[in-house]
Image 1 (spheres, rainbow, N blue to C red):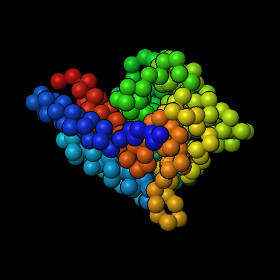
Image 2 (cartoon, rainbow, N blue to C red; image 1 turned 60 degrees about the vertical axis):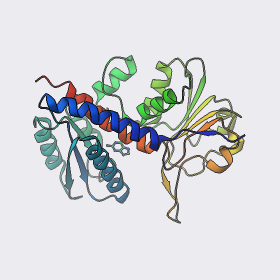
Image 3 (cartoon, protein in one colour; image 1 turned 120 degrees about the vertical axis):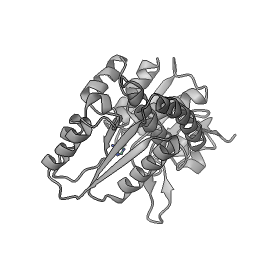
Image 4 (cartoon, rainbow, N blue to C red; image 1 turned 45 degrees about the vertical axis):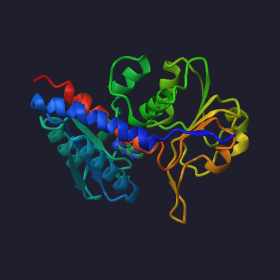
Length: 283
Ligand code: GUN
């Protein structure tokens, strides 16, 4: 049987129109949410991601202010811009698009963003809140995964979730959210020996490695939920995930496509984090 598709693009469109209504009501209180995006250098993939973020903001009525800094910018120059944005009342959310050029310390930049404006959820205070399950700003992709599961009415509690990938942006935080939801969680990576023996145990398989086609049909339990976070460009120019979609969709019960799966929902979560940050501002 062919898996049911979890349509992230459609869910994201719904989410953005709900957010637009919230933005309208915030505007009646004199608040227009604002997101500042910062890109240092001209990584072409980052340029596309930032453009998608700016477009989603516009669709929701959120102001977006893009700052394009040359790749030769010093850390002091980027920190100075972040400081200005931290102090700008019209800016409610700030992101520095990663990766940044090698001479910059990405960690120091992320930590320089004010906790209340850290709509990527990369600040240690927000990450600490995530560990505890306390209120804080959640990172966008992990939150997108959880919202997609919720929307498809897929229970997490009591299920075995296997996460393939151990990045700070996706693998580690999504594992924590799944733990918080009551799943039994195994975290692997692309080099885990006999990876298939572990992924075949997954009721819910989340893959975020950046390796095209890593997960093949034989590595998936029949009926499993497969969430593909990867976005890879093949030499042909085609965009694919980390999951061999055509074969895995014949085995899984649910699957997210790439493109049109987790990616658009990640962007919608960023807009949501920005709107929520603006809503917390005292009039
Ligand atoms: N690069 C890849 N994913 C992300 C993300 O979620 N946020 C930022 N700022 N950069 C990224």
